[in-house]
Every structure is written in C-alpha cells, then in structure tokens.
Length: 270
Image (tube, rainbow, N blue to C red; front, top):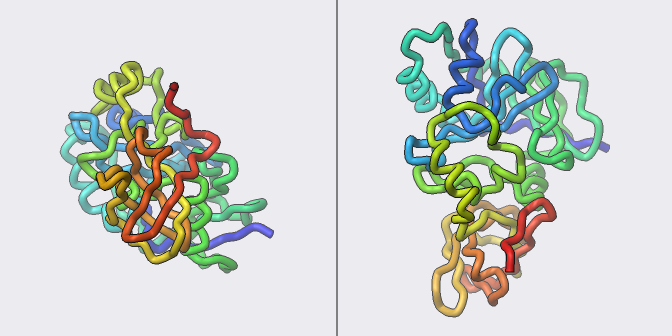
C-alpha cells in the first residue's frame, strides 16, 4: 500500500511568463528545460563561490514552473531571484497558501494532476502539489525516516547555506547537476570539485545506538571532531562525515553510530 503525507514545511513558488525557463536555467545547477508535466527536476541555487544556498524540485504544468521549496525560505528566494530578473519577462508568486506539497512512496501515487516522480531515486517516490486536501495515511515523520534511510537531504539542516558543496551532498549521483548545460552561478567551483576530486566529506545515513540525537551534534572519532548530525528520525540520521573517518569507531553525544553509505553513493578510491 502506498504511503502519502502532507509536508507542511514545504511551500510552492510559481514562476510564470515567457522567460521563466531561460531565466531560471541560467541560475541553477540543473537543466530546467527538462521539467514538464509529470517530470520534475531537482536543482540548487548557489553562491558565486559555488556554495549551496537553497535547493528545490521544479515541477511544471506546461504554463508555469512550480518550485517545491522549504516554505520559510520562499521570501528570501524571491528577493534573490528578483535581483537577477533585470528585463526578463518572468513573474513570481508565493502559492504556499493555495497548493500543499505531498510526498508519496511505496507504491502508485494518487491521481493528483500535479504529480511527478522524485527525480533523485526511484525508491524515493513522488512529489505532489494539490489545491485540494488529500487523505493522508502517513506522517511527515514517516517520510523523514524514509528519505533519511535513502540518504536524501531535505534542505537545511541537512544542507548548510554558504558552506555545503553540492557534490558533498550527492547532487552528482542523484542527478541534481547537469554537466552539459550552459553556465550558471557557481558552476566553476562545482566543476573543479568534480574533476579534481576535492571532496573530503559526505552526507550519508548513519545508524544510532540510541535515538534522541539532535541536529548539530558533533561526531567524534579518536577524540577528534569528524562530522555533524544533520537530521534524525529515531535511530537513523543523516550526518556529514569526513571520508577518512568512515572506518573508525564513531560517537555523538555518548551514542555510538555506524555509517551506512547508500548503494548509489560513489565510494572513494583506495
């Protein structure tokens, strides 16, 4: 039986106008032209220095782009996008009070017109936008456990604005970067990071000996801080960990933990 839950911490930003696709495509890490009815794109907006600012799912009904984005981040995102608008024919509107974001997984999605598969992993399920209330049979906490087990981030605190590099958080393996598209803000550092193999830490699931470890808790190995708990659901969590510490005994807040790199994650050589 498929699971579905509303995600009240997510909102919807509408981009309309004839230049909506070209405008956004020049700013974000993925190819916006690939978004269409039934097909979503996962992308991030970066700083000019190539550090993460915000990520979102881009859905489309053929007439507009609908960004599934952390709700509290929408005002700042709109302000930032307007700085780059110049003469582009694009309009923005916060639709968070009109459209609810739903996540559904473990089966066939409900018949909601604005539905697209989560483009990161088949197992992740689907993203749905609905103006009508949809009957839920799961909770946001259930979905958090599902996506954490898969190693999928959900914005902050999993991803740190002005700090996280996209390739640390799986954007390469999970299809959040298009390496063949034209220039976008932060592209140079992102490409350099990939081709020079500069990744020293990764975001990945960890199993906790005891539940209750909170986001921001430092992780230690041999008395040295080697990572941080980002988000948790019971006895699993997402953590940012140094790659050279993956095979060492790890602890956070007196709780032992063990990394569980997902199958999609590219392991370091050697």
